[in-house]
Image (tube, rainbow, N blue to C red; front, side):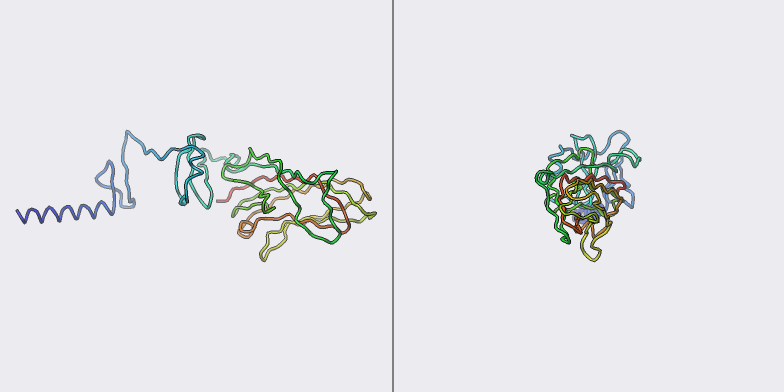
Length: 251
């Protein structure tokens, strides 16, 4: 009897070790490469299902966490500080990859413009009082952070940036030059510099539009990109607007 009990205990112990090493459900021979091998020809694997609000409320989600969003009828996985929607297609034109958003300042108008002093470089303010972002990619929270006054970046994303505003010289100079650049800080500093000549004279309204493609690597992702503006003569700035489009999704 004692020998039988010892053999039984040893058998249970070995079985426990095997279960701890590998688990098979629906199979007695789990694949050596899998910690869990589920096999069935009649049933599938059902992941946690939740609403979008519940998904976004998950506390400290781990990278690779997978859930099914019942509001969007789509799977989402957590990666690099954000939820990413699993694409159902391979087209790079999918809303999961590309998309745009529009941010319009509500502070500075023609009647109440921003005063730009000659030689003084500042961050071009945009309060994002009006935001149209229903076309932005599903994994992008925002392209522009109005709190930090920066265009956000994601490591490897390619984006197109449209910067628009109106400028009105307040001095009688036909060679007044406005310079706009993106400052991502660190050792890189200002990039994508653009010049614009206000050549129509004092108190004449000019329309500034600059469109360019950029890529947002580590420094941009860490610091954001601040739109900097300076002028060689005094001017007034108003009707500020950014339209930002993701043209390439980082891998």
